[in-house]
Amino acid sequence: MTSTDTPVETATAAASGASATERFQTDKSAFDAVKDVPKERVDLLAREVLEAVYATIRNHQVTYAEYQALKAWLIQVGLDGEWPLFLDVWVEHEVEQVNTAHRKGNKGTIEGPYYVPDAPEVADESGVATIPTREGEKGTPLVWKGTITSTDGTPLPDGKVEIWNADDDGFYSQFAPGIPEWNLRGTVSVGPDGSFEIHTIQPAPYQIPTDGACGKLIAAAGWHAWRPAHIHVKVSAPGHELLTAQLYFPGDVHNDDDIASAVKPELMLAPVPQEDGSVTVDYSFVLDPIQG
Ligand code: MBD
Ligand code: FE
Image 1 (cartoon, protein in one colour):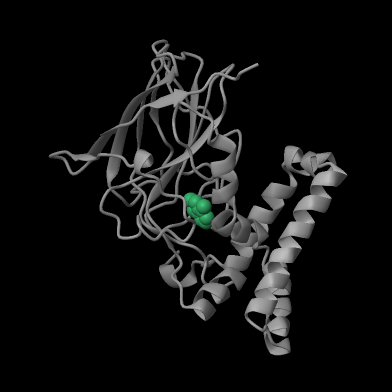
Image 2 (cartoon, helix red, strand yellow):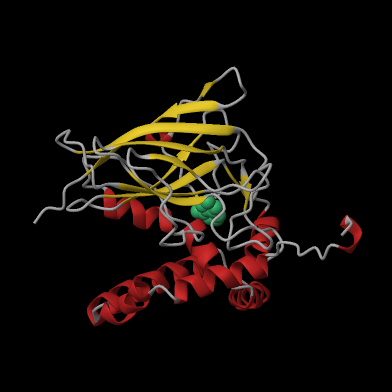
């Protein structure tokens, strides 16, 4: 087949939004949570959010035209399947802060809309792993070495690092068309000493979809749609709190103005360029024991 008769599916906000919405709806724990929130909390939280909306309307004398624009936009967020994107970009960072403030181990950050559980195991017995890539995958090869320990320094040999990131064009497998299912995703079980060595590709800066409702808000407000390049992880071990984090690269122009407000200095990698064009990083995780 020549390139002209290859059916080309392009990534759209509506398609990745639909995938993210569907993924969330199959997450049973998320839906169990709906029925578990006590009435008193719903009353308190809903009332306080609405009061904040009323105050904004009064303070800025919101017009009917603006109210209709809001209504049209909210409807479109749903039609585009972009509620997961909207919430994870503009709300999740605050929830993450509140819920991890007690931790003595690693800082984490938001999960975002593109996690998929149960990625295939890719490590050998000693925790050395190659993340699946396509033939000729674009981007700088990255070798990441680290360990998982408990806050008292004990290595956690039953620990796991789940890792996922966008490709060099900013697309995530399972949320953009034409990418193999588990591309740039994997589960890495550490070696007997708690160590891992992950071979993957350094991601590029990422622009959230601009052709959907979230993109319309960004354009209408004169914002930008960029997140700095990042690698997502979930780090777990029996008896320890799950750590959800993202690792960033120094010098990225969007480290200081991430649209998702999810960058922390503790999550910055220190890549060392190698002669063969690859980079190496050392970054280890410290998990908090579950108190109880
Ligand atoms: C992402 O890749 C992401 O990590 C977040 C938080 C929001 C949108 C896209
Ligand atoms: Fe991401």
